[in-house]
Length: 378
Image (cartoon, rainbow, N blue to C red; front, side, top):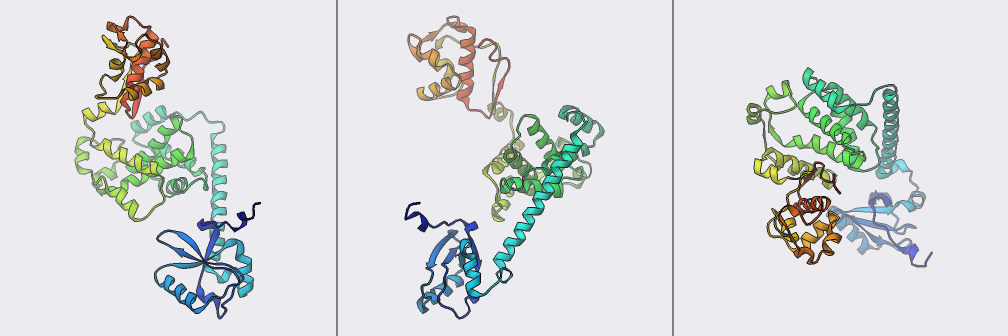
């Protein structure tokens, strides 16, 4: 270890516990270091080195900091020194009591998570694979989504409690709210099963989706009772008029309560809001499609890739071609991207035409890319 390494200071909140200055009693010299915490910057600053006197000027400054909303803290690696020097017990320090309580809560959560995983394993044994299409058809036919909701809750209950605040919140919301068969829980359960069925298995991504599905409804300003009383998988035109929402209200409320959520939660909610005012034009701009049969017109390679994407630079076209794995081929053509293709691209192969059209779709940077036998000749 280098000589300077042992003097490095960590400012992570988990490295400190907060104390009350009354616990100093009448002492003015301490064998531990004292830090002050600034809630605005969330920074811990070393205020007094160990065995240095707390003179009147520093005492007054410490009280000034406390009056302005700051607090006093000690490093956790000096906890024993702090307690023994002031003849205190852990129960005398509220922050240490909370830490013990939190540790017990985490242990309890881990225990319930383990039980949920074991229960999920037991129920899955001897059962056929969960098929979303069949289950969804049955739920819609019977107007009963209880099985979908229960299956989602049981799987989410087995999520880890220690990955991230978002995953933990998703698990908590599912355990507390995902019970009744109502419109909101149908949205959450279907969103979860659909994502799982598409191969999204990491809990962080699923946790973001679950939280967004739950919290999106915070923005509802008016929901007609007739909708909640008899929920359906889809809102029809008459119900849609009754169902009003302020698109920015949800995010405003979440920011106000300072909930610790990852950026994907907000992005999912934002995309969801956009679909509520979807037009045919915006829908068409949201995805690109490449079919087995391609369309190449008489013009340069550059023009064929850039077609339909407005004014784009040569660099953007080349980047799209690289993503489609056609850049190397184009570079070896006599005129590169300026090479003229004949009608229907008769001077290149079918596979090369497909890759050119895929590059065209890549250039559009839409949220969805649909490939229908688009690489059959590659």
